[in-house]
Length: 373
Image 1 (cartoon, one colour):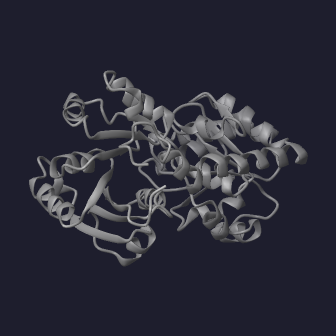
Image 2: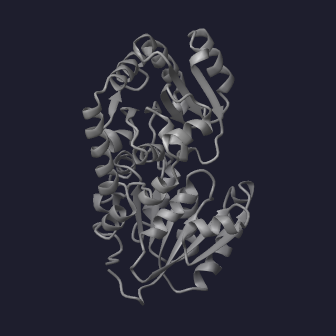
Image 3: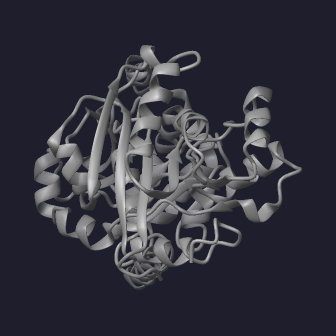
């Protein structure tokens, strides 16, 4: 652990849309109590004091580029980021996603930790060549073992200790305190108190495979409690086709498409089970939010999801609607004692592996990571 004069950390984020604002908070939290001060820089997005507050950083800088302005060589952004880095005595840089990592390496001579939140970041030969060019001061982190292994497969000549996993996480206490109780959550979502509710939250997009979700629910429905509902929160280009599918499957009256719900994770206690059917989800932050709400989880068996729920949730083969249906029926028939044990195990795993404290401990023990200790 560092002393009170440890220095400064430069955190560079592409933007603060979707889950990436909390990613900035997560990585700033790694340095609580270490003596390091964190400066967080957003490449895109307008200056917003609410965003700055949520970062929990000593300093927040908005470069305010549009997505179109940082295509190509990004010369202007490189020059501006170089000025930011030179104005302060930073020890190292944490860069989220490929573009900030690229800019950070070219603009500074700092050691750079590149955090990768998706599969395929090094599929392109140009990115592999770039990574090799800066390998002496570039360390890579995947948000799950699945993402880490994808990077290792693309960079087989890199030592494994330079490509590591640091799981996404939540501030467990803060998330739990913000979540509504079951009655209030159901009132907010307009759900009957006596309904048995399957919840799903995510974009209506092929990657989320809500097609299998609808088919599995339809197959399971005859064996589910009488007032069972499937609640889908989110918007996207597949909304119309998914609604048509629900009609074709004759379950339209049992499926609620609620669209975008503000602070949806605060309503998770409305669900009796949470189902994630995604195709190769790199991690799945919604899984942690469901765990914080003590909601049992059913998850597809690919991507990073199994690393989160394999010990306490149910897994089914991606795209297998019949297997999903069996999982739903099992969830509906759980005895209270079994459900209590499942929830307790999930709560323990959440704290031990996916909390800020767990991530902080893991980060400072990573091998060959800039010799930061």
